[in-house]
Image (cartoon, rainbow, N blue to C red; front, side, top):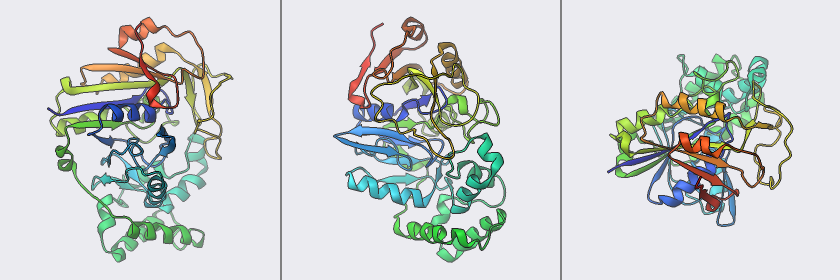
Amino acid sequence: MKKAKIVIGLGFGDEGKGITTDFLCDQNPESIVVRFSGGHQAAHTVLFDNKKHVHASFCSGALRGLPSYFSEHCIIHPSFLYNEKKELEEKNGNTELYIHPLAKVATPFDVWYNRKNVKNLEHGSCGKGIGATMKRNEGPYKLYAIDLLAPQSLLIERLKGIANYYGIYGNDELQNEVDYFLKCINNLKWKIKDYSFLKKYDTYIFEGSQGVLLDMNHGIFPNVTYANTTSKNAIEICKKLQIEGKNIETFYVSRCYVTRHGNGWMFNEEEIELRNNEEETCVYNEYQKGLRLGKLNLDLLLHAKKIDQIYNISKKNNIVITCLDQFDDSIDWGKLNHNFNRVYGSYSPESKAFKVLNI
């Protein structure tokens, strides 16, 4: 009997999906972790066995030793992937990564465009080429994971087309990055596998990216991400693997306060004094600026859950409230208990501090 556990953020991202995924990996050590949206812009932090890793191009079970799978709904960037692989190897993490043939490939040209486009920066960008790659793949200049297995001469021709698409073919500024991009492709052992490969496993942990309130169909445009951040893609994959709704369990995640890293509307934004915040990985950068904070609003959180339930067929829905060690606030636990099968609390940056809250 195959089972699936889906991790979904109920905010604008940075809710604690990495630590929740790690918790589920601890409970299900024989599973495989599947990313079903986003790509190398993720920053899912896991602390395990006195080691810390920020997962982006690998799933958040890698530090604990579980394999990763990136679905067709994801984006990979060979340079970012190769760099993170070396980091994980130094920490004895699992660098076993399988990629769907139709996963999209970001290039140095996409990253360049993301960082140079003024309108895109105003809307909000992490500066890693995600939106540009998604938009480019809607037209004729596609690049998929399967194309990385082609002879390099063919790959280079495809890259020339992408450079022309952005009007930057022959840009000497990018030559070193393109050379490194090609070097990384050659140095990586690609494991390109469609969904039939997943059938060898019995348990799947689906690790979401960002949050429901940034979903391209349900967020506030233009400050959205170019992805389905609901469970939509995960449920589609579950159906292909013939996993019934009664065997799907969802773990919705939120900090005990609201965060947003980037531009756009945010409810109850205010200065909040935090403690035990040394492991915060959402630090200031030139594209997203600083991490914005606000008080948690349960009505907004439950609305995000209702949006996800449009797509979700799981029969058990839990809530995980993270960062309870950082911020004391009055949460209506009874309201959460009424809307979820089980309420979990996280009191530490490490998943071993997860507790089921008897409320």
